[in-house]
Length: 477
Ligand code: URP
Ligand code: ZN
Image (cartoon, rainbow, N blue to C red; front, side):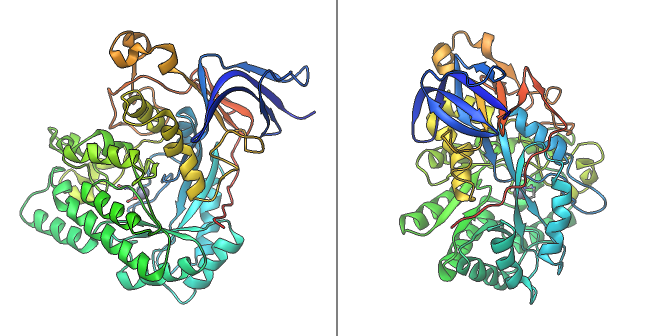
């Protein structure tokens, strides 16, 4: 007998439509979306979703589980803990990265990464990072797209001494990926300037975390956004700019899109909700906020929200890459350049965007669904298998308390206490000992999370913690 699930009475919200209907799931797929569906088998599990929004499972297209950063240090979440955190936050698919060593075969590095990723509790895909250009790279890029289900390739303009590429190699990558109808994703920061500023600050005895944002100011990002867009235009390569943090970058992206260039871009919750004053916290506390690009002066935040609303930016990802303060960030206690870059976010993404975006009328409910699920699915070759509640799609479904319907007064400031919780590292599932969102009030979070037709989160707990997800082969054509 097939595993079957009937979800009744929910308000289904997709990126481009919404309706009240029941959802019938069999063997991990949505097979019917219609009113008043009958329970097909006595053993069908029936879930009453009254008062809940039903949305397609979130897709976080930018996470770094189990990322080695040198000297034996690895990001705090492995695939198991990071994916558990993802599910608890309503994200049912993640896309992480393969990061080959200099000169290493892409396919060999992919094989190793898949062994680490197989412990993911939710479905997972991988982007391929190109960290060096060798005589085999072009052929291996083609192989990734044709045989491995990897059509997206990450390049770093930062980190020049480690995984960054120079412009010549970047052009080679874009040339091949563009011809093969893939997409290049790019981390935009002017690596040489960052290294110069870091050396200069350290030589002047300026070692505290507050020098991190000063060593990589907004123009250092925006200049490389403009340069990568120009290179992508010349090579006719589709582009996706990761973790946009600066207003100047938004302007450059908007101009390219207005000219008709295929440029897409993401931002992250931390750039929407925090600012660079965090680096001036006493003692070494600012280290918790060290990620690249860094947090910006507060004025940038509203421009990022506007860019999400007007589609200059298409996705909100997390760049989830947490490091513990103890035996992690504290490596940089005497030298901010040694603080490992990255923060946690995969569990908080959807609740933050719902609370501070939807409930504060910065984005609509449908736009929220689009930003966290549908657009990543479309951009990275998972749609319509994922990113939509529709017949034939994977049954990745989030039941989310409908705060707008239940309690309009949330926005008016009444009745908030009954619904409001705060984020605390004590309640987060991941392994990191710090959260940059500590104390943030939250007015909505997942009630139940279904991955591939199975309830994997309910009553505040991960269910079936031994069940692992599926490797997602992706295709852009
Ligand atoms: O600070 C960050 N972003 N850490 C993760 C690695 C990267 O740069 O994407
Ligand atoms: Zn990243």
